[in-house]
Image 1: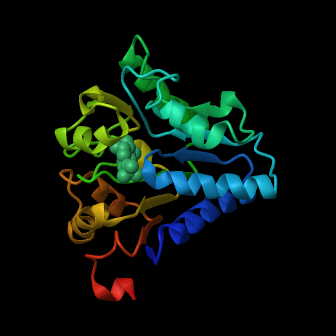
Image 2: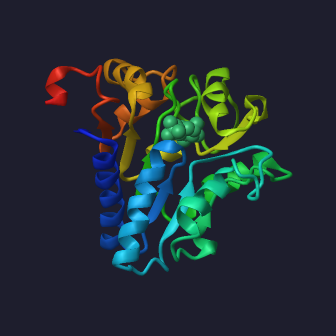
Length: 246
Ligand code: GLP
């Protein structure tokens, strides 16, 4: 299902409302969370609402999608740092219920296996929030990642390193590898929300719309899932068929 809104603010309100609805309907929900600039206004809106109308978050569990290899929690560009800055420092989610892949683990492969296992142990993800890379990656699952993948170490594509270079003082500082939840882990979520905003996402969103299920475009895996909402602003949807944008 496509939901197309006029502005980023509209997209963020809708997405934050969906997250809040899930939490209210199921206080012990398991949420899969994402990072990236797209999610910043979503989390800001959610935090805002939860400050105005506090909700018990003590039974909520979260799993983040991905993390750079070699960046610890104190690194300003680690996703752990991002999540604390935008969400966890502002909300009362018990720290033991917050999970991110450990990009500093000595045994990265073991940490990956344990991560997918931990998701299964809590009964799977109720709702997975996703952004999308300009090459169609979800999490950090780059083109040609098998759709059967579990949490794994992945070599970042040149495109992704260029795209994400904007967050680092020097683009050469972007790590070459990351840990990412696998596509199979994502597909097992009971509900998925993919969010794309801004003109830089128009091309990939049109490709995603027109392309069949194909490992060359990781986000097409979502076409195999029965409960996905793709949320866009008018700019990200600019190259989609007119009738969808009406
Ligand atoms: C990174 C993350 C993705 C995210 C993507 C888009 O590569 N690993 O999970 O979806 O960026 O980010 P942005 O929202 O900044 O465009």
